[in-house]
Image (cartoon, rainbow, N blue to C red; front, top):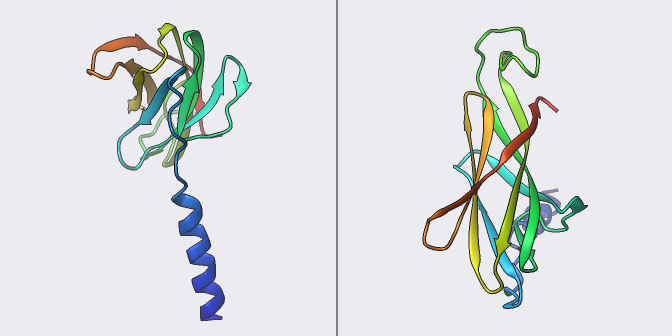
Length: 143
């Protein structure tokens, strides 16, 4: 039994340590950032499912990026409805989107997400830390 447990743990750790592909110089690379404890994952590019939750890589030009942000919330009263921001403790999920018209080939960007008052926010920065665009929250709740 300990051997099966060890092998299972080893497989899990190997899966978590997947190497990212090399950046394509003909495309823009977008890394995802959030604070410890939050889970931020890439979901869609231009309405199409993206196949790797760790980053985006897009052709130059205009794109709409969609991410999923999950975070823990503590109790705070309220009606518990999605729009009220109230409710109890647990995991909250926000779907956020960002539109940006000027992705450039060979450039690296940072897509940062966070939370304020049970709501998510999303911002795009260039390599030098300059704010390029702010995203919008599409929906947020316990789903």
